[in-house]
Image (tube, rainbow, N blue to C red; front, side, top):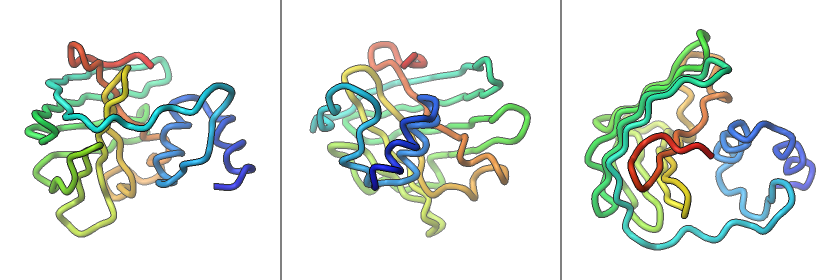
Length: 159
């Protein structure tokens, strides 16, 4: 990623930054703002029984259920809404798990480029998507950001 693109991403709101970075898979080497680069994802099993349902001030809403045992996804149901403009939907039955460590990756069974990624850092477990425009209402995909869970209790993470 060029320095100009990195600067453009750095100017976005924090949730939009995540979505932009995920949309450009492979952005290693791009730092956002001051501070140290994050540590690599630890190679350890992910364990989570998560449920996140929240509505934000800007109208963004999400409902997500994610159960992961020993880095194997047992349950996944995720729907997010971008205000009243539309939504995206992801169900485990539509995906196959192809990777479990250090992060989890699921690919769409329909052969599309859609994939789901799950990783854990010290503060949260993140469920994100890439290449999944067809699973969303037209025109909202760029604003459909990841859902984050608190690893301790499985609720919605704050940042």
